[in-house]
Image 1 (tube, chains in turn orange, red, cyan, yellow):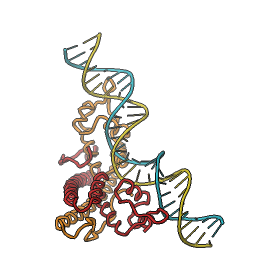
Image 2 (cartoon, chains in turn purple, blue, orange, cyan):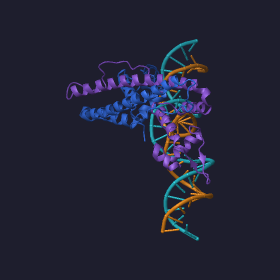
Image 3 (cartoon, helix red, strand yellow):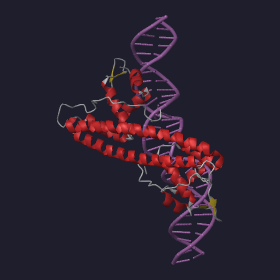
Image 4 (cartoon, protein in one colour):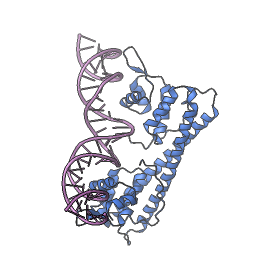
Length: 139
Length: 139
DNA sequence: GCTTGACTTAGAGTGCGCTCTACCACCTAT
DNA sequence: ATAGGTGGTAGAGCGCACTCTAAGTCAAGC
């Protein structure tokens, strides 16, 4: 499979695929006679997995760490598992935070609904302070 | 309240607070005789609200839109509500996606658990393709 | 009255994750 | 044989959201 086809199948641009290879997220692809990358379908599984990590907010640095462990063979399975478990916790915290913030947003919208031409001028007057727990936002 | 105190109270750096004012997220602060910003406690409510929007992934452009509507007085309440409702939907979708992706991650970790020294060499072999629904990731 | 430190401005720099450009090589169809 | 499309590399540029620097002002404490 050439890079253009892979690009269509995985939804990343050829540019991005080459970039991923350059930084080490993808293994160096085999080449044809003319030096063009030639992919095996198996790369799609790996790209899909990377997509999951990305969609759950894992920074590229960390994906790289995982990719490196993977390259190093089966002896690194434990470490890889640890990395995923750690990430899992982070995602769970992010999920809880997002849920809380959504609830606050819903309450806020409800007050808008109630106060169409009521006493509210300052729309930012929160009724319930509601815990703004430690956000997962980068410091 | 001077900017340093506000900074401590809201958890943003003085730099960031000035930056927010510069781009229009915060109203131009009143100044003392020496030209220094002097804040009223009410700004904290607004900053907290901005924090919620940020924590739910709203880009600054959109917060700016909201801030501008707010500046324009109560006649913009409907528009502000619409903006929040739209954002709410986006957050809900993001939440569902995150939940799905977390589930996939959990399954993956489970297979790691099962396959300590089993047939698995390629850790990225997914069992169930599991819908990688349209992600909220910027295209 | 002099130092210290929090403040002011404009604007430069940073880190992330791409995204695009320039320019060249190759391959296929007409 | 040539034109167009696809690919290659190196490296510049971009959008976002800050973050920091430089150079100066001002008020308070010793």
